[in-house]
Length: 238
Image (cartoon, rainbow, N blue to C red; front, top):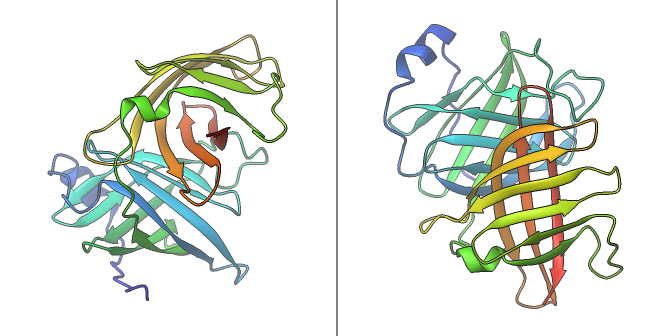
């Protein structure tokens, strides 16, 4: 059962005042749940990743993606994230979107309100994952968009030190690093993309997903810059 702990969003001026507050110890980690869209009345799946530094990244299967540094007042989170909300291209950040997200964490659950100006557009009911933190070596290997029909057109290679090289079907070339956390299953990700329309420097997160009952292990990533935001997953065969 998901416990709902709804916190009304505060004025933006209060968020600015709170920006120097210490991050809640309950927030860092991986959170899963459902998102309810106020306009359509529909539900989608949602994942949230909070780093130890307070970087918060949220993505839904309906295509809403958000990223931003959070401020905290005790266990209450506030963020003014970059997002693709209202963008015609789901890969593009919409600079006109002025969303505010807020929620109060318990040890195992949180409800996040996503507001556009004075209106709540989505409510996210989330529970915390109990997955152990991935080690640096867990990210090493060759990762494919479809490991059961692997194609060299979309491949990332990660070495034991976290160095990333790769390419995709659009011709993009990837170089970067993933740095694992010893405490949570959320790693810091930095990438340089070149030789395509999305060339630039990106920051984000990566998380490992391992199903012991199958031959599949995956990485999920969410990274962005001031223009673009990408959310996807890659897999390898054990």
